[in-house]
Length: 193
Image 1 (cartoon, rainbow, N blue to C red):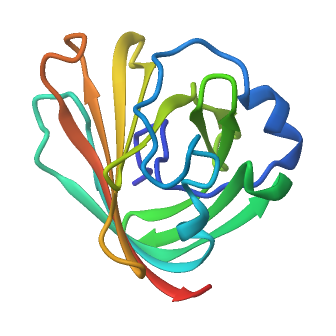
Image 2 (tube, helix red, strand yellow):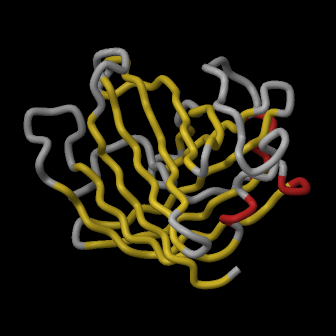
Image 3 (tube, rainbow, N blue to C red):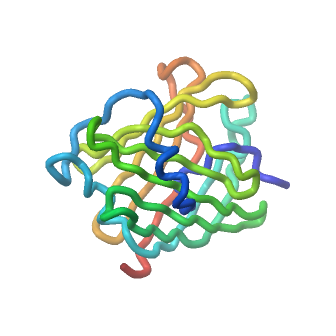
C-alpha cells in the first residue's frame, strides 16, 4: 500500500537550489518570536540528528479517518546560510512503506517569519509553503493547499519538549479553519547535535 498524502510535514529537507524559490508567496504574518529579537535563530535548537516516530492518517478529511500508519527512522537538520535557512532530511519506514522527504525552512527578515516548504521524494513535487514562527516555545505555521482537487487550509505546529525532544503536528481544514483534523504526528528524540 502506498501512503496517500501529498504533504510530508516534519520531513526531509535539502535541495539547496530551492532556497530562492521558497522565499516567495503570500500568506499570513507570523506570530512574534520568542527565541530572538527577530526570529532568525528560531530553529537553532533543532540542528542535529533525531530519531523520529511518525503516525500518518491514511485518508485525511474522509469518512474513514481512523486508520493510522506507523513509521520510524531519522531526521537530520542542517543549517544553511548562517542559519537563516535550514534543511531537514527525513527518512522513515514502516509496514506500509517508506517516506523519504525534505523540508526547506527559509527565514524572511522583512516579514520576520519562516516559510516551510516540503517535498516528498516519491513524487518530487514541492508543496505550497506554510508560514509562521515561534511564540512561547510553540511554532505555528499556516498555508493553503489542495487535497483531492479541493482547497484546504494547512496548519503545522512544533512543540519543543525540552532540549532533546520535540513534537510536530499537521492538520487540515476543509472549512476555512473552523475545524481542524490532525493527520500527521511526529515525535523526535535527539541522537546527537
